[in-house]
Every structure is written in structure tokens, then in C-alpha cells.
Image (cartoon, rainbow, N blue to C red; front, top):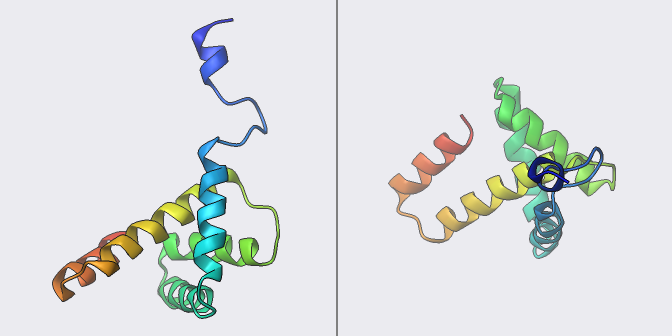
Length: 106
């Protein structure tokens, strides 16, 4: 077997990190009853302004919350986005927070 054959994901094989991302996302969204609602509203508001990232993440969040199938790369993207923002939010200056939100949604 070649290195390419052993290192590439097989068709329909999820990325191994997607399991951790899904676990983190589940824990994050259920730690506070308002977290999922807050993000749904934020994504909807940004999506209404034509923000493509917010459209994708809002739909990914909706599907995940309703137990619908979600691709591993969408789970990874949503988890990474939320985790990155949460880290910035917990140690922000208002300038850093505003910059983080603007950067993440562009």
C-alpha cells in the first residue's frame, strides 16, 4: 500500500478529529441553555446581511441541534469557529473582541 492510500480518507470516512469536534460542540451547546439560541440569532443576523460564513454555520448549527446528518468538515468548521471565538471572548479587551468577531465572520 502506498503512503497516499494509507494517509488519505476513504470515501465516506469521517475525519478522525470530527469525533472530538462533535463531542466538544455537544458539550458547549448544552452547558448553558442560552448558548445555542445566542449563536442561532447571531448567525441569522449576519446571514441576513449576506454573510456566507454565517449562512453555512447557521445551517450547520440548525442541523446539528435537530439531529440531522452533518458532514464532518461542517462540524469541524463550526466547532473550530465557536471554540476560537470563545477563547477570544474569555480573554478580551473590547478592541480585541470586536476585531475577533469581524475577522471570524468575513
